[in-house]
Length: 502
Image (tube, rainbow, N blue to C red):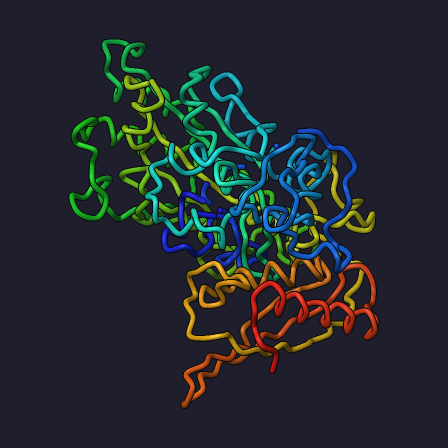
């Protein structure tokens, strides 16, 4: 739930539920929200596409249908999913044996017993707009619904932007008291070492049924279940009351304070148990790599921060103190009762959480660049094993970077919240630039940053300059091939967005 989907980024920014290495974990995708699949057939790598495939929009051309993962769909004016994304769907990294994303998933799942939790890992990424947005109460004007943020197959069908797209269906199926969903999720996003248009989320929930607990006493039943969670000596900062009338309100129409006190305690103790598992493994890996000495590291500590999510109340974020900094790890809360009622289980209540798997995997394995997860280079993949303890990633080489600038005029004054196209250049959105660059350069682009911005004092026209850093993870790029890619980027910007090169 990438605080990468639902659990964050209510202003349209990316979830904060995932990240990378110690210091910059806070900016990566984690994206409850930030919940998103099935076979592992061989697929073209998205890392080095040909320029001709860049930023394809089937609905914008003559094609009326598109085939994705062996399914045929009608296209329309909403269609914006490019071939580079389509080709990556079969990869399903969270299901690949010995892949760091899959190993991270298994590590977290191990703290949620199959006696109470069903683990869903094969839910398909193509979902309806109703599943992805409507079932969760997204307002019609929510920025997450925009074509600048979401990959649309057509106006009624999307690539899920969070694992929560399946939440109402799982609540409705009512097959177990708890569940986790792990899946690939898709969002148009920035290009840098901590963001990728495909990332992986895990969300979980635990529910209790008023009809089934003894005497209908939810609080007593929850406290009894909490006593079964392993005790720990983790240092926990939790200074705020469980509920606060203004900051973190009780759903007083449906729940009483005693119930929520019990639910919150069970939720927090369950997730603290996960933290201990993750960070004890991370410490062991750091010691084995000579990055730390046993017995000298600071005691592990966490803190609970009041938060707001439209789908839970009260709500919290969990932060962990790691290598001298507080890292935002996940978001969680007491499930909004309306969601359960609408799913046909009005007698149930409980909690839910969401976490970004890339964020945790980058921390565990010290992986510095999110693109590495998509590498098929054996020098990367051979470093991970389900049979061996977690070890720190050893870089196999550092290839030189190559910076290129691209500067252009927008046609007229523009908004940063629109959906730029050649026919409507006023609706400029930076994600459209990122999508074009990613479509041309694929994983040969390390990052793209707005380098300069200028507004002409007389005409009011706006000029932007982006700096593109081309760098392969696997080889040295030649000037000739980088120049070819950069020329194609400029061409696509003019054709797709109607800009004027400077």
